[in-house]
Length: 110
Image (cartoon, rainbow, N blue to C red; front, side, top):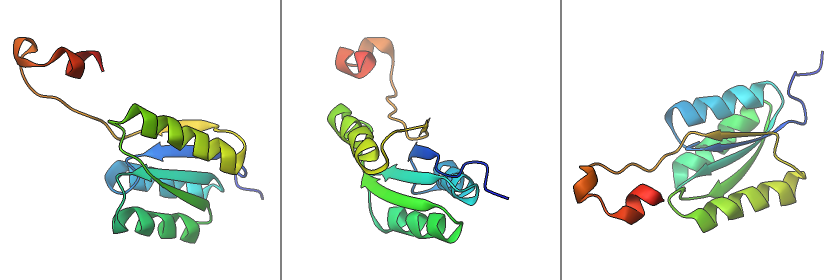
């Protein structure tokens, strides 16, 4: 029986740890091609090895989701390599703490 997601292309941000890393493994176990995005480092490479061990294909793209240009480059790289994106799991996030009065408008408006 063919895995249910054979040939499926999934981009996962925050893929180097926690929920993102497990999500990547679950997509891989079902045959997906997984684009792993995170801020880099050995953990992202280890996640790629886990994806391969689970039966998927991994592409590592170091990405800081706080940088819109880097996120666009992530999407472009995924499409260039696999031809499309079927699923985008936006697990990474950028957080700002403070009162509205004390938070710069640029942090609120993106």
